[in-house]
View 1: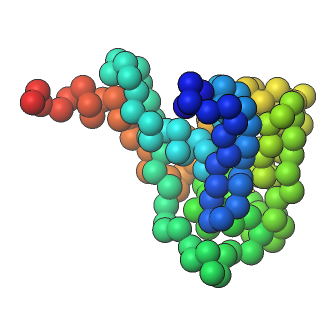
View 2 (view 1 turned 135 degrees about the horizontal axis):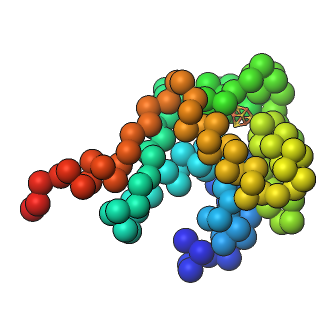
Length: 145
Ligand code: SF4
């Protein structure tokens, strides 16, 4: 992606949820939806282990979006505030994210998006209400064509 775009904006239900220079977004995604999207990108090297994050539920109607964070009905990291308050933008060095939890992790990490994104990915991968599977193992076990 970083080879074909300068900046990337990730949208969910008609809203930008994360935006950053392409290289930065690839290196340090922060929003749970972005992290789930990236987990679906096939690994070029089949020996690389990759956890696929499959989000629960369906995309709600954009004509009647959920209150608070629009992603909260499907977000494994959703908290009470997410259901009530639309997350404002948090900006760090040209990286913008709309997420209460990511904002908190960025603050904890002193603005280090890579560290905050890593913590977000760990929390997401261990959340109880997602379906996570090791895609690489499935590929490795698939019969030869
Ligand atoms: S604001 Fe809450 S519900 Fe929305 S993406 Fe962040 S953690 Fe998930």
